[in-house]
Length: 432
Image 1: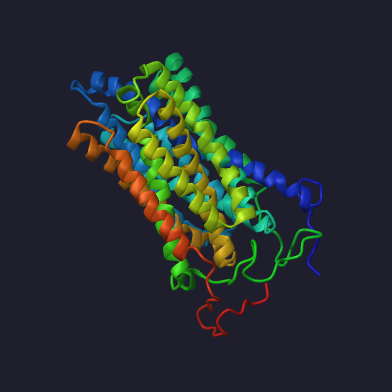
Image 2: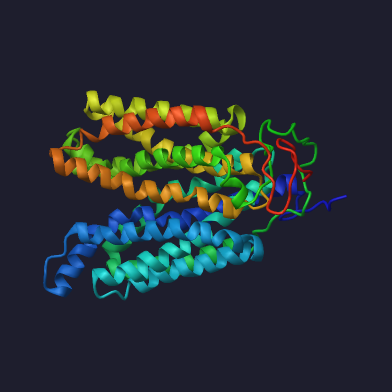
């Protein structure tokens, strides 16, 4: 009989929600990258004064892109270490690197130095730590996986609402470089303390009173396979393509939310800044909302719903680019991005199991990195070529239509995939 664990005192069925809460706190800290826009103007002014030449906002935006790139690269590389060393140690290492990146950013004497100390070191730290609370939530909640993962990731999407306001106040009071130091010290303290209770359930543990559905039904995976087995399925490529399109649309919306508001919708700059914080709330809430839907109506149907919403929002913004359309469309786009950051990890566990989950989801997460590069670049290219952001939206609507078709055709539970060295009849699921 598997042992009956307790978490923070209560039985695991209740105490496991505490681990979800800690995952939310961890992701709130890791998501501080989304507050970068608050640093852009103060950093440009700082380096212009110290370097004796004009430093543009475009130059200061590059550390943000470097950060996201190293975040996406580190995710699949860190997966095997979560299994080997456990979520606590991996989160501590990632948290220390994340805070170190912010601390060292306060010593940067050029924008190029920020690429290394903030973009590379900080991005690696977030990429290392990000998968651990997701894996913890997926393991402790086989019965409500989408909701648990979504709640753990709520902090990442909601972070901009909290950390951007904090950064703005600190920059006004102490200056931009001192703010980097304060953020770095605070992130190290909070991330390390939050990591200490994180752990996986004992092997074979299941929630009391919960009976696993038949293989291929609900949240139980059709197969338990490792990363190589996952890569042999069409389901993986369908999930990857859909995740890419969902992230492309959402990250594009994040990168151009303020200029679209001022240029297309006619919103004044101050209100546009406030609306970015408003959209961040939808980005955060989209994780548990769509994660819960994935539990109730399947990842495939939830994915198709997000693409229908993305297409509708894009067409609305394209045909009626006023203030109401802007607020509705960007709330939807930000919310669907948050949704995909819950749908994809939940679908990975549901389709391929949790035996090699961190490494499997690490590969799937590369779709986020690709979307982070393509989305903003597509928006910038269209803006440069046409002189307006309006042409972005029909492209996003068309990509959403493609995503809908791919989800319908390929985001289906795979047949059983044997692990390397094992052979079993197709469609047979091994005992857990």
